[in-house]
Image (tube, rainbow, N blue to C red):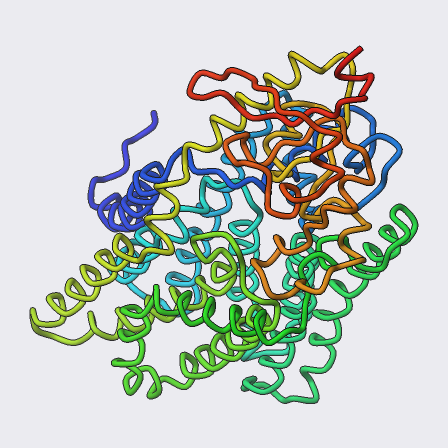
Length: 506
């Protein structure tokens, strides 16, 4: 007969369950505070995924191959969920949240297997993670940044073993995860090089013995990256993705924007950084934790410099900082454990004060909170406009020039011309004189080129925006296009229609 386990056996397990469950609940509630925020670029990936499922390949339009995405693994994951019958938007949200949960499991592994911290330290680190606005925003916003975060969390955890021993198995595991990072973000090789460099510098093991695992750690992602480049050249005829051409600009303005972006992204986590710094003397006394901290700091610093040189980002919520958030939370867990090891109620008050300050900062920082809340309802308008265009013009399949390259093309199913060049090879490779001085990914607009393509329809953003300055004063636009309206539930969308188009005026 099966006997019930004594209640005393369940007691030690309960705190660990709560240490995971409470932060997870907080994260879900926090994420839905920003719901239904969803970024337009996520719909670009979803359009590629949908066309892949339809047997049209990794393409943006029929008879037009351009790599307008930079997140191949994320795209394939979304497509896999779509193949199983899931709605692609719901799939993108679900995978985002699952990636955040996988990151929390890495924290549990770190606490129990690496630093042998207690459940209270894990709970504290998990709550800091769940209260972070960038984490909450992007856990439902549909882009690949939470997947990068989860992969790097497990890379960090598994690589810490390599600090102490030349373990080829750990190197293989890290190499495989870094290969997935390379498939998810074009900056993946930078993280591989940064980790290998950090391990070589910070290792406690014999450096000569470390050469073999470090070679393995680098060779696996390098092979996968080169395979992806080979596929790109074969399929698209390019070495770099179109998004790299569309975003990379070595200008003083872009570098300044990148610097400001990184400073603000770090400032979001300032209370947690102060906690680690205030307990730095205690952490330095532990040789193992000191080496771990140095490794995480080195990799994080290289990543921040990379983001800065890349010009930062246009989106709110500091998504590029998520790749190194796990490194900070690991150190928060170690620092809080040191505090818990000390006696006195003041330590609990101090940790509580840090948490309250961090919580307050998340809801007062304009670049996170205000932007995500104020722009969250545009998605529904974009969905409605895209479906209206499909209903009205779906049979004719006119070419529509769009300012929002994601939601409108995805729901309209029409051939689309991205006026900002993320999915247009000509614009990305032929930038104007203003390239590098505007918003990243939004400074390639060229009215001459767009009008030379003779789009049948032009939609400036969601149809709420009048013709952009370059178009409003362009004689070809004035002569060849007229304004029509599509009535939506909340407003009449402005659609500019080509006068001699047979597809929209049979």
